[in-house]
Image: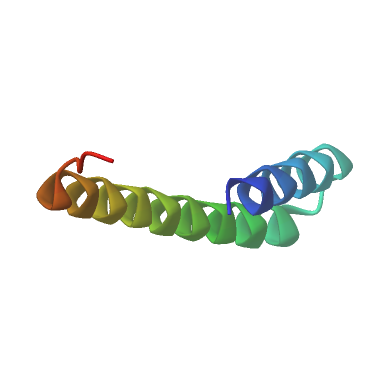
Length: 57
């Protein structure tokens, strides 16, 4: 997921440099949404991992 964020940020930078403000604005919003989804999924997996605890083999 973070790979998609980087891709959209690169698209944003290129579009911004070339003067395509609408495309740059849209792609930065998509990058923000994907980033926050990735952060939420990380936090959920961290909490679940802590709740399950460690098991001995």
